[in-house]
Length: 164
Image (cartoon, rainbow, N blue to C red):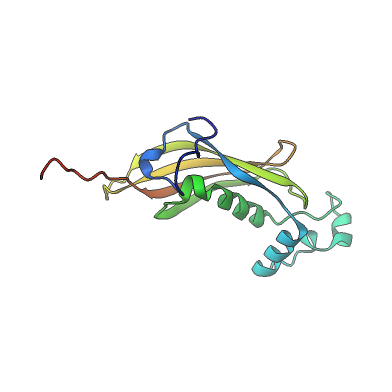
């Protein structure tokens, strides 16, 4: 499916709306702000000075504050919800979460998701599992994060009207 696979769909998709190889380009992108990073640090009690102390960060290999990796992960998952898990019964698992480059305040992130596998539930005919790979890029096209996940989705069962 083309990268504009999200057009024409209401919020979320059913299991049948996914095919192996589909690529979804998630919109809108998000510029990470200092406030985003600070709030996430406070909410999660992550007090590492690399994320909030400019003087400390200057003495590190990056020379500046680095955005909390779990915020980047959460942000990218959130960016994909409308296209991937908007109708999900459950996100079953996240796999192979790889932070490939640091994210800095002021970076603008965009993400894409590729469908890797689809399979109907073995125990419940009204649902299926979709496995996807999501990648996040900064404003220069650098790959900063990648992960896979398995999402349990309802099937769009059509009512059989031939009996009545």
